[in-house]
Image (cartoon, rainbow, N blue to C red; front, side):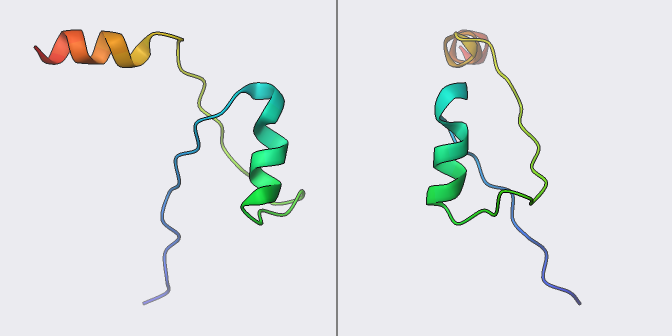
Length: 50
């Protein structure tokens, strides 16, 4: 069985995304998927969980 890449969660600002990817050794031409969450998503998730 081939090794599957594990998903990675990176929390940063849009302006610092390229710098964070470079710091992690991710090549500039490597495809990535970016999910944009609302500013208060964690607060809403905690409220929903209660």
